[in-house]
Amino acid sequence: MNRFYVVLACLAVVLAVGTFTMLKSGGGAPAAATGAPPTVVDDGFRGYSLGSGDAPVEITEYLDFECPVCASFAIIQMPTIKEQLINTGKARWRYRDFPLPNHRYSRFAAHAAQCAGAQGRFFEMHDQLFYNHQWAQTGKDPSRLFRDLARAAGVELTAYDQCMKDGRYAQRIEFSRQEGDQVLVDGTPTFFANGKQLKFRRLPTSDDFKAVVDSIIASSRARR
Amino acid sequence: MRYRQAIALLALIGLFVALYLWLHALGFGGPIKCGTGGCETVQASPYAVLFGVPVALYGVVGYVTILVVALVALRPAALPDGRWSVRLVVLSSVGVLFTAYLTYLEFFVIHAICRWCVGSAVSITAIWIVSLFSLRSPAIRTDRGASPPPQDQRA
Image 1 (tube, one colour):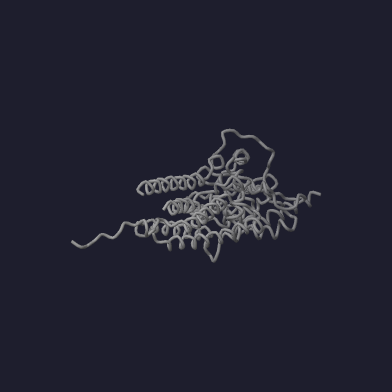
Image 2 (image 1 turned 90 degrees about the vertical axis):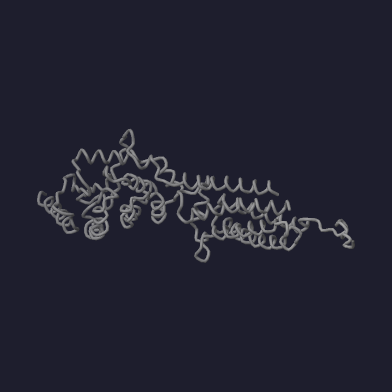
């Protein structure tokens, strides 16, 4: 009888340790997707873009997913910009990654967006990350939350998990950041209109972009 | 007695399988360790929650109950009592029926198989089979003919 209870207790300990190990090893942001890669290769990718390929103006936004100003811009200004400029064919919006070094999980978030993008869900994931931006304030490992956001964005999670584990797009994100350095991006969000950096004294509004786009269109017409 | 011990050990295994799935449903750990995407599909399906509670929690409660009943039935005073075997059969039958329903959902509704759910199904089915055997064989033989004769109290 006593031997049975010893066996039962040993089995309980083994199972408890096994369960704890599986839960612990299953979590956490994969290092490959969180840190900068040792090497950088240009895969020819130049960011996901929103809007018509024939739009006369291309706005490029260098963003950091952990940046609260970027989130504020995405939530407050982008809906109007989409309505007034992108959906009307006046402008095309291109997103480039510029993860800031002081943000612990910005590369990880950018990577989550890229892995979603591989399944055609970049913009949905972009919105999920910005509209649920509380993760950027807590400092906690957001890997679990990002999976939930990816699921909400319509991403198939098995491929997403593998993509994140492999750090498949870490080099692409670093290439984008280095590209930002070369064009003198010094913070986020930084905007370019047809390759020319836009300088604003404050966070620009949809009206500012409407003025910029209308001005470029008007000047190109005048030149004709 | 051996049957009840086996039931307790199997219930402990089933308990940890259900516990892992429940903790995962609560948000502990990362991706579920499964080997295929089946577990994720099953856990993400609307059938993973029943009456607002993760299905795995029903498993945790069920296995804890079976484990406790099996341990109580192993007390020396309870060993000759066949009613404990009946209780274990009833409990494990409920578990098997619930598991059969969940397995049906996996095969024919969700179209995905979760290996952990299969592990739990194997545990509860084994418990049910062992409990049936324990019903046929009393924990301790209480054959009156084999009992020692009452001692003569006269001086």
